[in-house]
Image (cartoon, rainbow, N blue to C red; front, side):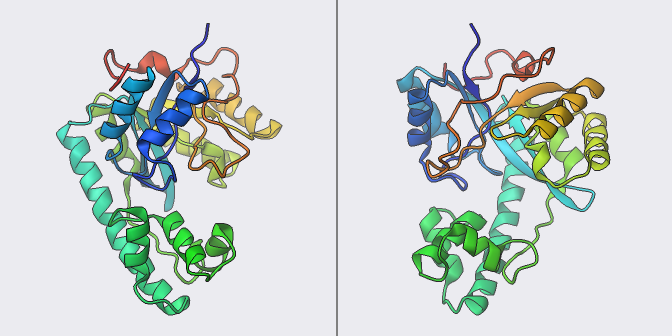
Length: 285
């Protein structure tokens, strides 16, 4: 009998709307047996999630989604099963958080001018409960202040690339992030590869560079993939020495089109990423 898993989801420790406890409880209610909490550039939600997982009888893997630079683009690398006390990983997270704080402060200054607000950064930080709020928290703040209709409108008007409050961030290079995750005993996974707007050739170059850097897996089991995307990912698994991972990328119950743990089956012949996890990697089991 196959394990019901979800190796990509988010809590209020980054840009999700459920607390780590609420997220774990929602996963358990959905039948998930093995969950990885992969908040953006932070491990802060894992202790609370581990306590909740023990209460729910759910296996929790330590995880993270690291924002990295590759070929002048932002790409996301999921780390699974790391030692969260590893000094190199702790230093990486601290550096990423500092970069996020600087970006958030700049977004706030731009929104003050563009949206006619005062203290945009402080408002978003208070809403998020962190000094490094991501763009979704600024979008929620704009909705709460009546400046936009909804979060999508906030991104389209202010926050997406090319708009007045968009701020790029000098993330660490992909190869460095992969090296840190591997040194911490984790598995490095390319997150949602079809969402970067890459051509087939550019995606294959990304995966070539990722494999050369020591990357090990590719997310292929995700909700709402069309036939062409599924075919492309099957081709990538065939042509690159990568294991297969999957996750919902759950952020909020408002995402009515997805459910924690409800993922497509892995392509035939794919090697599951669970084979690479180190023994005893789970924080709760």
